[in-house]
Length: 413
Ligand SMILES: [Zn+2]
Image 1: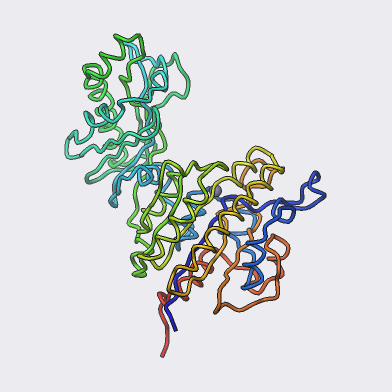
Image 2: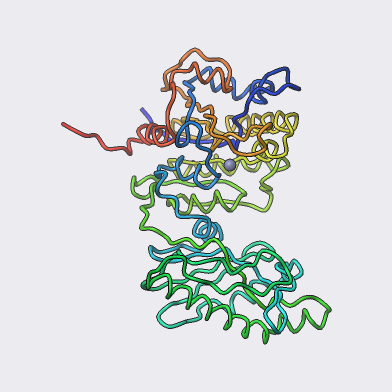
């Protein structure tokens, strides 16, 4: 018998509630989706609580849970964004979300986004990266547009410090303050405040800003920070299980969580993170990744966006596009030698009526030659609730998948 491999396709935010304009059906119930239904007919479905019924989770935590982490492992937005920008954090690092901003000579914020700077932020970031303040090293990396990530690395740091971003213009930046009475928090605030002033000096003198000013643009002469988070000592779940894994996605958050878990992130500018993403290329990339990996995650963002927009018709289209994506995947799998088990899941529900993530369970499915068939012939929230997998948590679902790779431990004798 050939070895098993797993392709896990995640339809972001696909779970929904009955929608009036769809005749009281959910977008998943309403959509035409021959491939998803065929997968249901050749496997077992169920419903999954990412964490607990009624506890909504974000895309970052939802994916962490799907990749085998515990709820309490969540390190905060700053560290996740750093991983999303390709910075590998070490335990004890404190990461911040940062903006390039414009301040005047009194350090009053003129523009929180430095005129929505898009170009040359890599050069500005390089001028700040590697700075040393006391025994702390600064790691600074540009992100999209005016965004960046700041990491403080060294002994005795804390995440318990306040934001320096005043959130509105015409106010002076806020000095970082310790939000807990500890030496670590005091030290982190002191280092961060020192960094902000030194960064201001470096940026004021930087040729990129001289050129911007000469061209009548706002200089990116200050860094504003928020969302401090300390990196806990987290295991890399996929590496721990010795599973070779890859994740195909557009969204940096998802790619970051994958990197955190020891899952190789794969992306392409043609993956847009929206309904116009190149689904043929995405499917091809996923199938190719199965050659070198045992566990391949394929992420599709559009259903979540339609839920946030309260656009049920758009969500139906997103489901139908996801179905076509899976159609391309199934075609491609005929070229893979090993037995590929196909699993479907979501990272949370995003009901249209709610316009936000909810704690409703999501439908899941596992399908393949050697998977028990539960008699379901459609894939949607209600059919899944009657399926053979019953009700599982994200951790149970991940464990179940890993067992097909024989990566989970036998206990007892
Ligand atoms: Zn999501």
